[in-house]
Length: 225
Image (cartoon, rainbow, N blue to C red):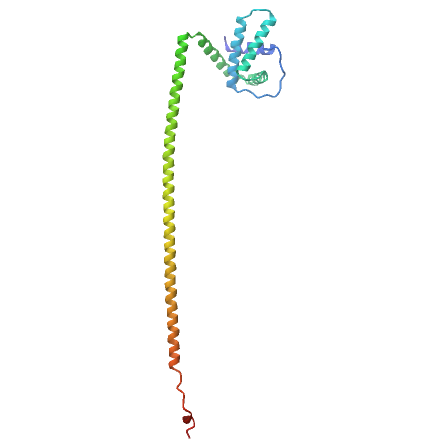
């Protein structure tokens, strides 16, 4: 079935009411394009099942159609309002919606192929999926282990660098303290030397003054005629 015919048929189904009651339009969340593609594929398959089982009167067919529709909604965990609003939103973008329907058709064909598989083919397919899953899990674990080893290596290098920095900081601190101590000691020596020099100079000055003190004259000598 061609894409244009599928779109036209499905749009007609929506207009006539795929289910018996329309709850009216209201502001709801727009489904992603991938989700809507999956829903449309399942709805087309459901519609095909209804045509195959056209048994009973009009009400019975309508009820069956309604049941199929509700089953698809429950399967994808969405409401009619979400589906209806999303469908009307995407269908206004003709080019984009056309590409979406290409994917809908591919999904329908894929499901048809799955239904045609023999039990042995289905077993082989599931086994292939399981092996692929195991292989992916092995790769994932190997990648995680590799990343873990790399992170451990990075952490070890970082810790080593931090230890070197701390050791250097201690070394610099000791060097600075030693320099300050040496400077303080040198300054004390200079101060002591200066103090001794000044004390010696002061002592020498006093001794000089003491030596120059006049000799007292006797009183008899003061009254010589």
